[in-house]
Length: 504
Image 1 (cartoon, rainbow, N blue to C red):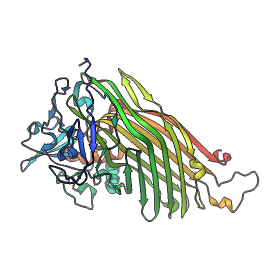
Image 2 (image 1 turned 30 degrees about the vertical axis):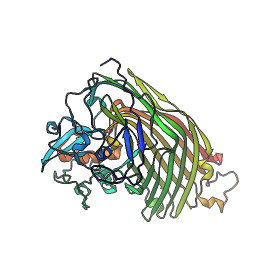
Image 3 (image 1 turned 120 degrees about the horizontal axis):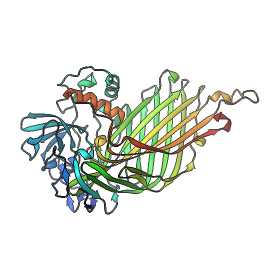
Image 4 (image 1 turned 180 degrees about the horizontal axis):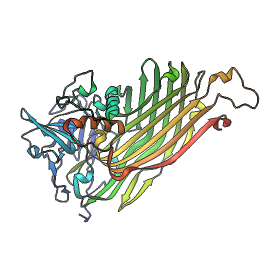
């Protein structure tokens, strides 16, 4: 459909009701969220709004709309991949492996397995691209979508947050080891010695911004979004300790978007995020074991911050922010420690645009240094020490849950590295003319990423494919859509050294 149909954006009003219990479902206290003047039910708050047929939108022929939406949902596993639905709900009986389930703004995916038990239908899905759901349609925001008061959905307990499961999935990703089909069938908590046998956890009710969320051995406290998107990170195994705080500072962030699909092809895709203000980073690390062992951990923070946009031509889009982290240490001697902090200003919109095969990316102004990482480096060790921290926040306009969203994705990645040479140079000066070994160095780089489709972090996709083998399903790729692989642009890369001779 090439005719232009621009849907007006429904206003999102968030009202906090003091002491008022939710109606329907869990009956717990929660903020009252109204979309387009209508308050979300407890089921909609938990599982998302239902799609509605609309004559200006054509779905792909294998898409099955669950018109009862969230009201048909009995439970969802915490990873968002298995949905238990009321068998009697409209559309549920049409679900079959190979079809695309569209149950709600959070329940969208390619069906890989359908099972029936006690009046319920248990459906397992895999990620899809937007064009696997929508064949024709044009959507746009007429006013900015505010990210001030999102709903925080926790995925703590998903297999891909478990350190042992991540390790096992990585080790078996190149093997053909068998997995028993019975291992992932019951939605309950069962701590098994073998992570492949751990039964899956049901998704918890959203309950405010979670603290102390575990992911791949780290404890994280994420935050979003009125003042920015970021997280506090802690790791302590008795041998290595690490603490960090990182923030993409923002001032009342909001976003605009436009999407046009015709004949199952993306013609136009635009996503702009406003309110960028700066970057703040602090790092502390120490090691009792030195070179004997290091940290090398990549993980997704299992909290999805989501704002319901409302129905655009019957489709309940959401705007969300998610976060990924990479930590590496390089301690060369026992009992070494290292710390640093820095802050930088940025200005301007973040985002990208695509039209008929051509891409454009919005480059923010800056960063302008407020306080230097290299000037703040402290630490004592008889050997050289270093730490690398990479943080990525991704803004997504689309459909789905957590890292499996189909939509428009824009990522902002900050990578910092800090290092210091041996402190012995302070006590045993080298001969005149010899380069000192008490060097300090720091680097800051910024990358932007963009795509239309889906993009799953590598550790997550390894665990998901490990799980999908239960159903003998075809492995999913880490990304799908355009461009392929997702676009990436470096906009800043600058190292600093003190003294200057350390650079050589």
